[in-house]
Length: 102
Image (cartoon, rainbow, N blue to C red):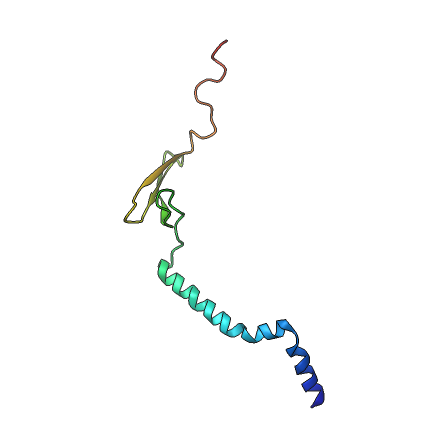
């Protein structure tokens, strides 16, 4: 049994082997944390951060104008603010370019 004991001593000196011994407890703790977070969010992905109150409850409320206008709303009861995004106005020149002074 001398070879087995020497092998066990050699494994005990390897840091990764020591870490593998604690893996089952750490995995169980992580599974419990994930289950608690899933229960907290109700299985849904948390919303984006609200630019007004900072809560992770900013969600897309509705889209219209063939996807060119989005309305985002904070679902936090204390805030409830909304923000409109217009994609048809972004990065487009307003009016005719180059008409002044010519």
